[in-house]
Length: 150
Picture (tube, rainbow, N blue to C red):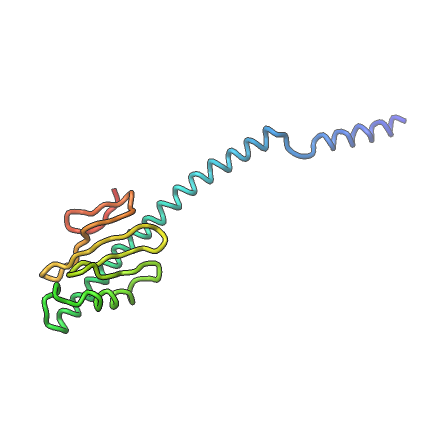
């Protein structure tokens, strides 16, 4: 009989030790929630940094197109047809962004599905300057017309 009692006691102990208590589960969920919060903030910062790099790349692309087109056509860079420049820049900018003519020597960059964008202006000397940003919280425009992190 004592062997039977000890078997029952072992089974009872095994059943009692299976699983987690409610407090252990709550602590585990809270730890995961805290880690997920940090990951979400880091991810949004990484996305904004990627979009800032895209703003730089678009500025370089517009600069290259304006320089080549004004030299080839032998005209003042501000007199270039805006749509032709914007169409040429589209080839160099990834599918997640669109460069359009803003009229005159102004070009707009719209980054798809983010609400972020930039506006560039071509000077009479052919320099392309970043004149405004939209949707960026951690980046601003420097005095020389480039983007930098706050």
